[in-house]
Amino acid sequence: MYKKELDSLISSNSLPKSIMLYGECEYFIKYYGDKIASVFGKKDEILSFYFDEYEYKGAKNFISQASLFEDKNILIIKHDKKISKKELDTLVSLCHKNSKSYFIFECYGDDLKAKEMAKSFAKSKSASFVRFFKPYPREAATVLAKLSKEKGLDIDPYALQHLYFIQNEDLSLSAAELDKLSLLDRKITVQDIDRLVYSLGSVGLDDMIEKLMLKQDIKSSLHRLLESGSSDEVTVINALENYITQLFMFHIYIKIYGKVDTKEILGYNMPPFIANKRADLSIKIPLEKYRDILNFLTDTELKLKTSQNIDKNSLLFSALIKLQTFL
Image 1 (tube, rainbow, N blue to C red):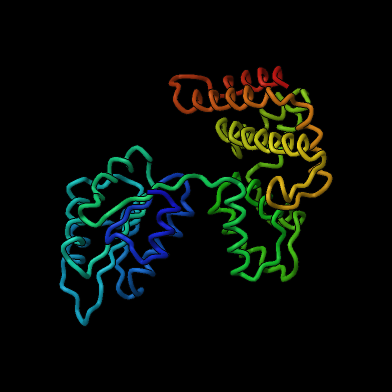
Image 2 (tube, rainbow, N blue to C red):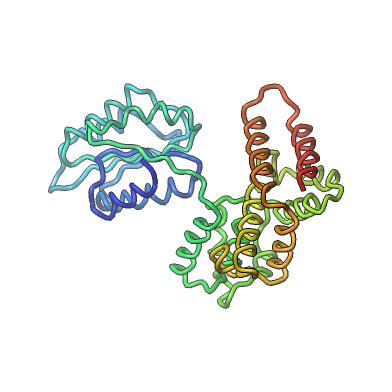
């Protein structure tokens, strides 16, 4: 199942007894693991195994035991390595048979291995699995806005979007920075984030993308970006895909309404000087070119992720040079 279905099961108190969480967003894996555990029972009813601490015999014995005084047995395993099918099948079966036992498996490992392990979480045994995908920027901003509200932070939606981007669209890192920002005890601005948050390089990434869009020489900017280790080839392509998609949204809105309203376009207010720059760039690209550009970027991303024995640096650079011919 996916995140939306999981939210529905939590709301209706209809969760399976065993559940596996995995995917591209570690923040969601941890967040929902904690949330499900709180639905299953109390903290003192939980036995957790963290990564290499996992020990099959101990996990099996815990969920096999009869509950005392109506207490529950809530087993949580957080792991980034493969657990054998036999072990997972047994743990899931034991929870299915024991009315007081529950199992949460937070898998932080490779998706291919996770998909294999997910087969042990069958509906016939009151089990299921959830795959989380990387959130879109607007969804990430919504999550961060909710966290900010819980922490009593006064922060502009654009500032949250900016925080997400300078952390290379890592929701876990972005959420962790909110505690630091809460020390300011005042409204938080983009400038505060630039000053206080450790950036993983998106400022340089933004500069490189703007040069690319203006058909300027990007060789030195791209080289510095990759050499710094703050971004890799796939990160650059993903950032470009997001940027071009945003320009497309600007282009369509301007064509229809003849004005720029970032609240309507993106769901939040963007600083005017940035909005005007994006609007100007969006109109310069012919509407029919957007599909070609996005298809080209998707193909490039696929090559970077799947091709063997290639020079990814050279492939990225040649792709960006070719991309400029679309503009």
